[in-house]
Image (cartoon, rainbow, N blue to C red; front, side, top):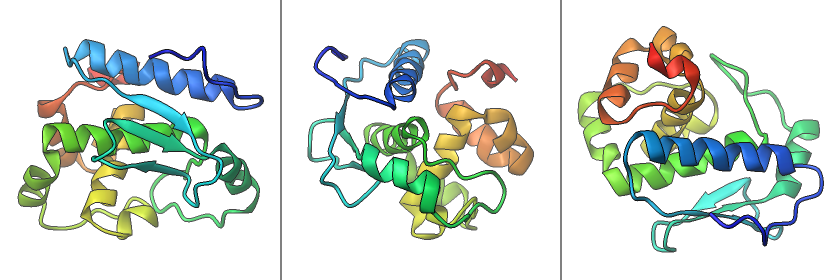
Length: 166
């Protein structure tokens, strides 16, 4: 990914961390997946992924910043994270789901819902993105919360985090 055209003032470290983690996930799993992270200050959402827009993920840093100050707590099992890092990983989870067609398999394997937080209550795709995001960022925590979902994702792809080797 070419980050030379990206200009971020205060969130650059999290943005670059997200790119590195996504790139590592792609590399260790042997994917040839292309993607781009794009800043969209006009979006009404923290982040967006539209499968019709050629692997483009959109992030709104101004909402991410506001969320840290004004968002009501909504986590049920883990601390909610509205950093640009976590939002990028969440949106990348949607992209990975679309490319690997994980959602259908997930719904068949898990007819019962897992509500990790307020966002995962919206629909099954958001639930899956939250579960995948947790698996990518902290697979050990997902294993503690729901071992069967952890095993399901581990069979599909490896987590790029150090604790993903468990």
